[in-house]
Image (cartoon, rainbow, N blue to C red; front, side, top):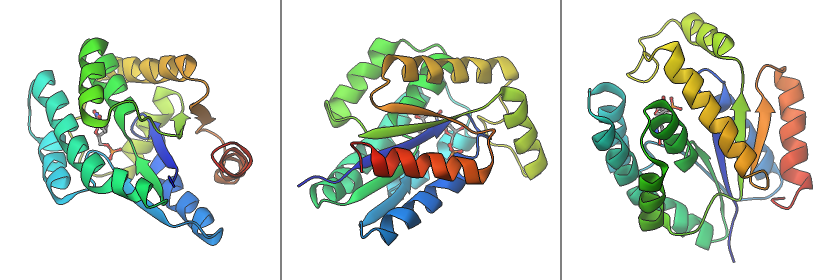
Length: 205
Ligand code: TMP
C-alpha cells in the first residue's frame, strides 16, 4: 500500500502555503490520513538546518548540500514511512525547489542535483506537484505588504527571481504528467475549485 505524495512549489510570495492547509482539510474530510510538512524542515534536524539556510550567508555548494541533508532526513524519517503506511503527504516545497533556486537562480549544474536526488530518494518523485505561478512584480508586492523581516532568499534581486520562475516553468514543461501550473493571480475561490478538480478527479485522487 502506498499513499500519495503531493508537493507545492512556486516563487516566494506566490501564496502556496495558504493552500496547503486548505487542501489537507479537504482530504481529511474525505477520510484520508494526511501529513503536512515543509522543506527545508520537516524534522528537528531539518528545522535547524532551515534556520541556517534562511539566515546564514554561504556558497551555493553548501546551500545545496544542506538542502539535501535536510531532505535526506525528511525523506527517510518522515515522508517515506508515511507513504508506506498508506498516508498522504503534502509537502510545502521539495526537490523542484532546488532545481529552481539553486539550479535556475544560482546556476548550479543540473547533473549535480540529479546525483543528489538519486542518492537521497532514488527514482521516487512526487505523485503530483502544484506549481503556483505569478508575475514577479505581484509576488514582490505581496512580500512587501506582509511587512516582516526578509530572509536570505527573499532579499535576492529581481533577476534571481526571474531565473527561479523560469526554471520552475521549464520543469513544468518537461514534466507535464506530474507538474500542474496554477495561476496564483486568481481568486482563492477559483484556485480552490481548480485544486479540488485536479486532486479529486485525476489519477492522484
Ligand atoms: P519557504 O519560504 O517556502 O518556506 O521556503 C524557504 C526558502 O528556501 C524559499 O525562499 C526557497 C528556498 N529553498 C531553496 O532555495 N531550495 C530548496 O530546495 C528549498 C526546499 C527551498
